[in-house]
Image (cartoon, rainbow, N blue to C red):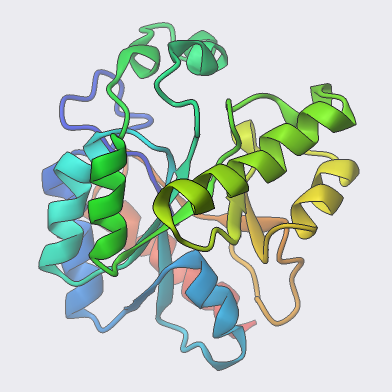
Length: 234
């Protein structure tokens, strides 16, 4: 399940406000859902209950720390943040700017290293890779792909003294060569394809996610959860 999170959202199509996010996390907690990081979800794929969930955030925006993290701590809820290494270079989000004419995404503050360390030390947050620069992988040559995919992992592991084994494709775009390169360094990879997976049967390097947007009220949120439960039982 992927959340995009911002306090003062100008376009609700992407953003879940903190108050609504807390309602959603509280609902999951009150209804006995178990929170996993992505790597934990994969590690336990043969022993998951139908009420198992992995919350994910893409890119590495500071509001993941200032807005979402206090709520996650309150309910002891785990999550995974897919980090862009060069996130402080505003050029990396230029393509996202084209998709959202307000340009809001390009100018947002990104996570600081000390904030990431605090997230990691909480035991609730896994840091995965979202490449070095958030480039469109299928348009790159192999050397460039290796830099984006493998060096981002090495940078995360060196800087934060952790294992980085979860990956997320920028823009949800990838080709067969990208998958092969990701398989050499990671145990799983998520896409932006909407849906759920039976982890005992699915390709762990093309995992789908359910998107929760700012347009989803609690009724819509519950409907998406029910669809996920139906998919789990099939």
